Image (cartoon, rainbow, N blue to C red):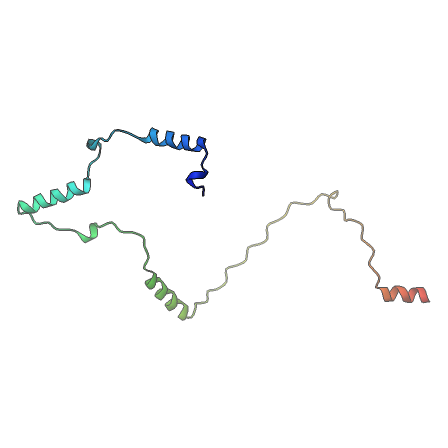
Length: 125
């Protein structure tokens, strides 16, 4: 990361231009505290004598998993013997397209290497 002293004049001018382009006049009318408005409405209802009942089921639920419960379930499942199920029938292998005779020609076989001892014996006889 560059230090402030290492910045070039061009980088500084671009940063200033970006900051200036984002500056606007403060207009508090554009912003509303909706949480505060809801709380004030609840307080007003309570002041008028209404009973405020919160529904625990209405609270938003998340998909967060309790790791300890998940671990306990995993350990419990690992301790049980696994059920054996009959194996599923194997599928027949897919048929391959026929190979033309031109591409089916084999490369000429390479001569086998003869071990050095055998070659020496042949020369000696």
